[in-house]
Image 1 (cartoon, helix red, strand yellow):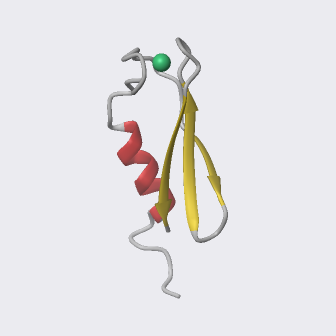
Image 2: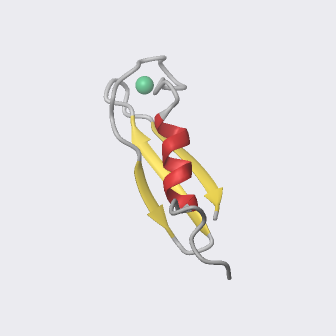
Length: 64
Ligand SMILES: [Zn+2]
């Protein structure tokens, strides 16, 4: 395993990528500023958020 890359973890880079996107609900098109909630199982990281308008849960999953 290599050590941390440039002081920024892959985890943080993925989060920054998500944060840079408009948070538009895929179901109803509502845009809010809710935060992505991160959960990692070691090999993958999962970001989820819930639309505050229709309650649809959106999930993004990445390999670390
Ligand atoms: Zn929605």
